[in-house]
Amino acid sequence: MMMMILSQKFQNVTFNFNKRNIIKSFFTNTTKRLNQKQTYRILFFGSDNFSVPSLKALINESKNPDTFVKSIEAVVPPDKKTGRGYKELATSPVKKFAKEYDLKIHEAPPKSLEGWEVPKSNFDFAIVVSFGYFLTPSILESFTKGTINVHPSLLPKYRGASPIQYTILNNDKITGITIQELHHETFDAGKVLRQITIDVPPNSTYNTLESLLATKGAELLIDTLKNFDYHKDNAKEQDALKISKAPKIRKEMSEIKWSHISAQQLEQLDRAISHQLHNISLPSLSQQQLLSQPGKTLRPGTILIRHLEQSSPVAYVVCAGNSFITFNSVKVEGKREDF
Image 1 (cartoon, one colour):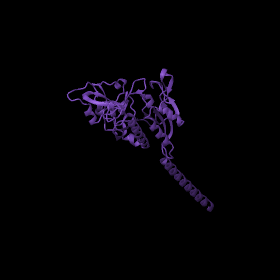
Image 2 (cartoon, helix red, strand yellow; image 1 turned 135 degrees about the horizontal axis):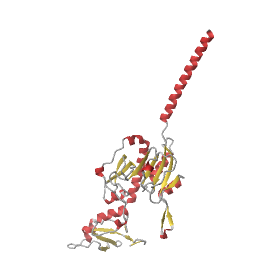
Image 3 (cartoon, helix red, strand yellow; image 1 turned 90 degrees about the vertical axis):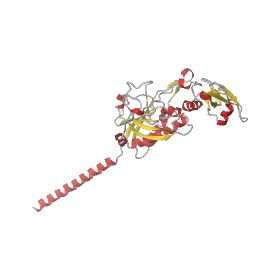
Image 4 (cartoon, helix red, strand yellow; image 1 turned 45 degrees about the vertical axis):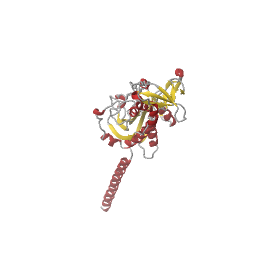
C-alpha cells in the first residue's frame, strides 16, 4: 500500500514537472517568435543615377545584425546600343552597381513588361525606383508583401517621368519625396505611404537636385520599410484635385524660340535639361544697363559681343521682353563645345 502511494506521488511530481517544462517552453518559443525581426526578399527595379542610392541603402541595410533584408535581386533595362554606328553598348548605372555587389541580375525586355514574369523566388517586396516600365497587375500580384515606389515630388504634384526637371522649370522653392504603393492602372497614382518636403537649393541644376533627392529618397525608403505595416495601415489616397503632370522631356523643348522665352525662363530651362549654350547666366543689373539702348528695342535672338572690364569677350543674346542672357560657349549638336 505504501509503495502504491509513493508511486502515485512520484507520477504526480513527474507530471507537474513536465507540465511546467511544456509551459516554459511554450512561452520561451513564443517570446523568440515575437522578438524575431521579420525579413524580406526584395526584387529591386531600377535604371539610372536616381535609383542607385536606394539600392545602395538596401545593400547597406542587409549588413546590419538586425536587418529586415533577407535577400536582394535586381531587374534592369537591357543594354542600349549607342555611339557612332551604334556599335557600343551602354549599361545602366543600376546594372553596373548591382554587378559590383554580386547581386543576381534579371534583364527586362526592351520596351514593355507585358507577358514578362517575375523570377520564381517568392519575393516579398518589389522596390521600384526610376525604372521607366509599367508593372502590370499580374506582376504586382506576385509580391506577398507589397510593391513600393520612390518618387521625387510631392504627389499628386508632378506625376510622370520628369518631376525634377519640372521643379526647376517652374522655379519651385519646395519639392519633396513620396513613397507610394504602385497602382495597378496608372503611373504615380498609388496610395501615399510617406512624404517629406525639401527646400530646393538656389540655382539647382538637374544633376545637383537629382543627387539630393536620390539621397533623401533612399533614407525615407529604408525608414518606411522598417515600419511598413504601420505605414500601410495609414496610407492615404492622393487628392485628385491636386494632380499635375510632368511628362517626359521632349527633344523639341531644347529648341530656343527667342521671342517666346524670357531670359529667366531660358536660364531655368538650361538648369533643368541642359542645353547647347553652356555656362548660361543672367547678366547683372549693371551689365544690363550697358546693353540697353534707350528708345530702341532689340530683336529677340540678336547677339551682342561686349568687352567688359578688360575681360574676355562675352556673348549676350536678347530674349523676350528685351531681357538678356549671357553664355561663354556653344555646343553644336555632334560637334565639340566651342565659342
